[in-house]
Length: 139
Image (tube, rainbow, N blue to C red; front, side):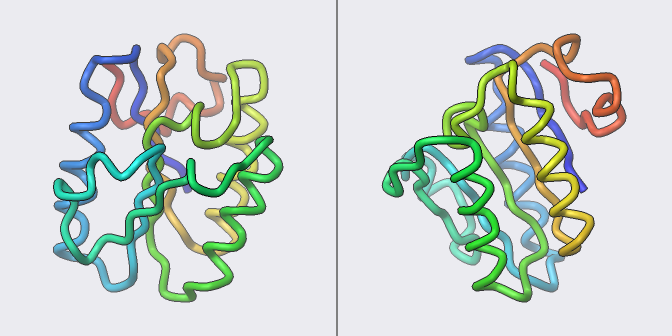
């Protein structure tokens, strides 16, 4: 399953994402991972949340990013949720390939019973209609 937080850059998506992940960890039975483009938000996250700085892995394409996600899943069988901040940047995706990557994450989420909560710097109007029901915040 995927959940989307959408809006232009600087509108407060990261704050919503951080608030959500910190509240979810209180009731989580499994593990939660937070992927970001840096370690800037390390001290804003509960210490039970695993922060991964994706920029340190030199991913070159959205295909490599999907492989990276599979690697995380293969190492953690108790994984419940993955939070993705600055999605276009960390996933090496742009607006033309966004829907394909979201389709793949949705498929992965269903297969492995993992929820992806994704912050994307796009307007809600620019997201494919099939993802409209997955929008939890549009700024």
